[in-house]
Length: 89
Image (cartoon, rainbow, N blue to C red; front, side):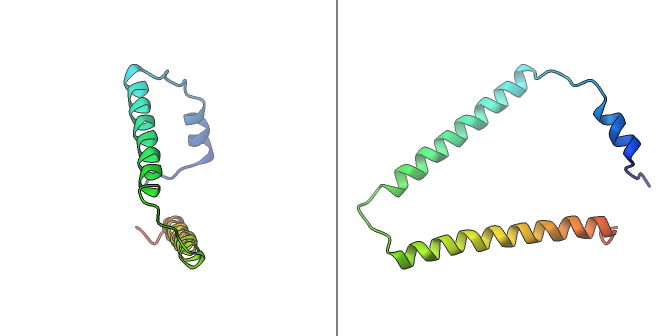
């Protein structure tokens, strides 16, 4: 069973880093383009109509986003905790 020790992490951190190649740059450019396109699409979709979101609707939207984020963070925390305690073995 391989255990991660301080020495192994330190050895990995001291290894020379490879420079980014053309493939890495291309991937980053594609990801940036997808991100910008998604922002444009969200802006376009939000302003597609002249509809107005009421304060109750905006409150529901904010609560939905916050609670979804909290649920995701809590579940990820449980995954890390469970792995750290050895329940995933």
